[in-house]
Length: 430
Ligand code: KIV
Image 1 (cartoon, helix red, strand yellow):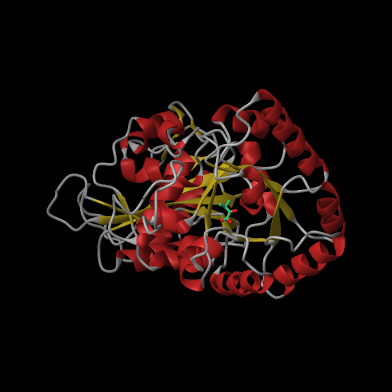
Image 2: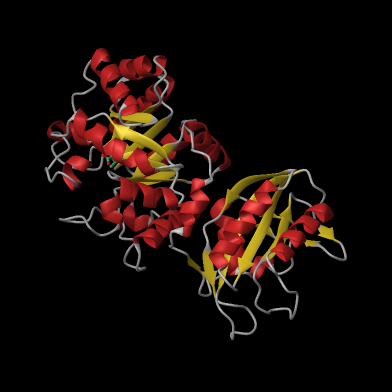
């Protein structure tokens, strides 16, 4: 049975209280931790004369009965010195059973779904972060409830504590991404080229980190990605994988490093063995190369649409697949890439309706950049979302640092906007 717990604290050291509670819950026999949301800061309900709360939502799998679980959560609250006084009073630790599978319970000590949860921003928003497709018994789709629930001062906490939450999570694989596509949960991805950004992106709970050959432009200052060498990619991939605990790291095979089967195998092996990448990405419908790499046990991500390594043939950074014939070719190429054994596809700068069609036809996850809102996930270049890029901002990107004051919360806001389907909006699409 999947159960959702709401955790809150506003006394002593709330962040530590929540992490200690998480660890205590996960240790109970018959309970398996599934996910833990980001930490959120919320103003107190009722009396405002008390400190802000830190809240989170935890998903667990359990075979305990509802009242057995209630006894466990109350024992953990007591161990953390919770004193049951007035209704909206301060508390060192509060653990509420929000949902118990799809059961509706009306017992003297336990009401499930938790009363009031559907009006509370500090419950609905963290719940949405970890399980956006939930249906709340008697209340309907979580998505609709979140849409009607203003944040009311709720903010994602951007402190180092979220590293702890991520550190205890298992590393993601392409199977997790596939499962996300299947259940309709958006996949988040950003590029990173070094350990610090890699760790921050990982801590924000972003599922995929792409060590892109875009580093040729944003790190090395070239006007194209063509000068990037395999050793550059190995170096930057290693920097990222050193600190990344949870996200799946994909690394680009740069220009001309997969021109033959032998070159592709040698260079993909270097990215994996020396760089620590879990998947390699290559541009174009290189069916034979993909089949060959897959046959050696290498996970491959395809890349279609605007192909920066083909820039001199394309004649500029332009939207691809606008004409019917080009759109048909892109769809056919996407299917061949999938049939060749690729486990993910990046679609760059294509019209949103074409990207939607491709996403629907493919069973593997399709991650868009400038490809509209209907892809299974989104990727952007880290420097673009932090407003650090020189030159004209690409239409498909957005500066997420504008509305906040820390990089960590900009990353979380990006992830949240993608998960909620708010990004990309029409103005970011073609
Ligand atoms: O190199 C890169 O960063 C990329 C993304 C833009 C998809 O390929």
